Image (cartoon, rainbow, N blue to C red; front, top):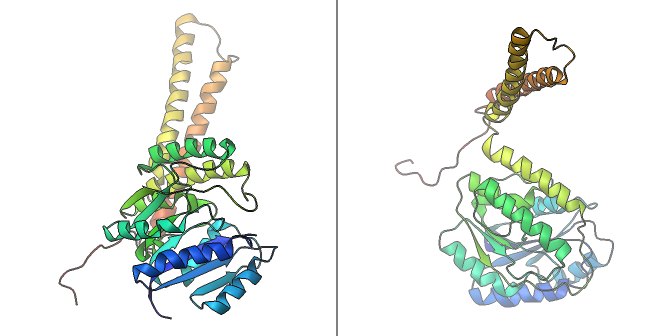
Length: 314
């Protein structure tokens, strides 16, 4: 099979009970669109019969393709493996637990046809316990404010992309949840649509509280990658100047105080704080300079821009 209209990229781990129903739902809701499609399931280290179920489905329909990873590498790695093999002009990602409704597929396609490059699902009425929904709301609000991308649900795995988007993004760690921010930083048009979200019918969630910590750390990474990757001195330098200036002014105050009052300042805790702030400031400035040198050395080795259209070239 050559290029197809739609590729479904679906990572999974231990979802044997949902796969047949999910496959049926995708086929039933995509076939009426009269578009060619493929379904790529990535088995991310399942220990149940998920792989066996997928092999049985593949024998019935060769549009269903399987990637089996050697062990559980995580969702980002599973998505990357699927993206590399996908041949669709439009790529749709969704979870394999049946919480994402295949009946939403036509709406994603319609939004892409309106000219958007990435359409993210918004689980407006989420069917999950508060232990998942509350942290998610906090992080989504924080991610929206810091990234400048005005969407409500970064965590939703139900998304549609133009092929150009995934070809120009490098996803690793837990960064898959912030794909909209990474795409927006490269100039792609990003939007979202409310989607139906179902309660989990089988199994249990693969994510625990450690996901919150990882999510926060990755948010910091995304902000740095999208704002300061090519100008690290703007981040480290600004912070360094703030610390150094605070320490300098603190010590200047103590020097003036000594000359005015004649009292000793050598044993005052404020002097120690001032010196410490200046040292920390110098360290931040040094890191910024090193970052600038590294950025200069790699400048030009990797394309930093994406061209939307060219006219007059042959």
